[in-house]
Image 1 (spheres, rainbow, N blue to C red):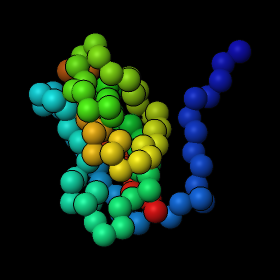
Image 2: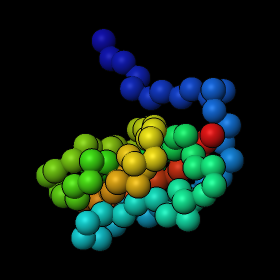
Image 3: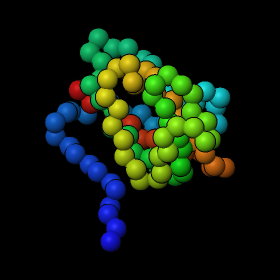
Image 4: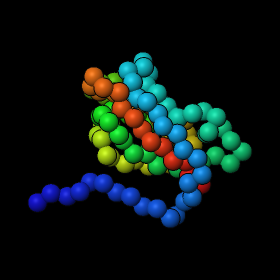
Length: 107
């Protein structure tokens, strides 16, 4: 028996902005656009889908590495809640190909 790990819930929050993030091998990882987080009314959460390739992420202030952090695979989804977690979010690719994160900011 297998289970479909994808989860999508739409309705509780309203999407109002989006960005595509290319996740490469930048030392320290890549994060969200700081200008989108430092607004008068910051997002309540960010909905993320993974395209293209696997990456790893951390949101506790540490930098992800090839073997450190939570793995995200293509077609996985992730919600990040809490402004501090959003500001601390960093991702790095794990293979030869860059990964692409599609992010929707919600309030």
